[in-house]
Image 1 (tube, helix red, strand yellow):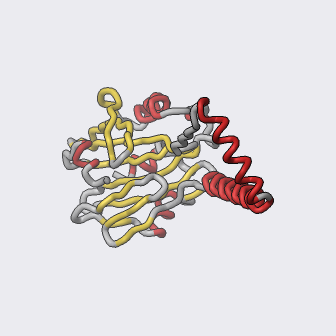
Image 2: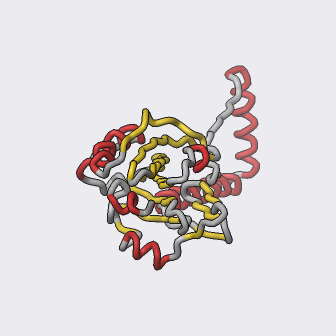
Image 3: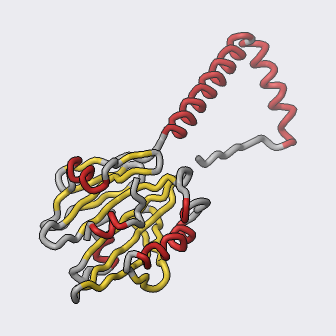
Length: 231
């Protein structure tokens, strides 16, 4: 799978709480409990054991379901793209279109491997402006991304690669809030034939994945202009 920092992207211009009784009332509570057990006997014990077994089974099922969660391509509904795993939405600006499966495969080849997923692409065919969403599987990365554990280290690792592609990183990464989550964003620019292309990298670590949104624009749009497409 091509990494997000390679030319493919550049070219596509339980809270738990417990309460307990005080020590002064413990003897009365114990006596009442013993009386209830004597009266109900095996029925109470049986119900308690059954409830405990059901609770353990539910907990095991929840844990298994959580462990099975992983990113996947989201869903388009008319002009709105929704990614449940990242908890984010993207709305197509006027004049933009969503890339279909054929375009995705033509651009990226395989869109899903053990190394990650190219989840979405949308573009303005008249200008080349585009956005790509992808997941990088940090457990499977090698080379300059080996051992990356957070967003800051991720940007440190790819800056030299951006430079090699002719991009100039502008300033330091900044934090931006999208929905209920905080993302780290970095800006890079490229001059070509008198035209300035800006790329905005918007990333957030989710579990063992780096979720990456990359905007490539050349009409003077700012980072905040691009982020306004997201919710």
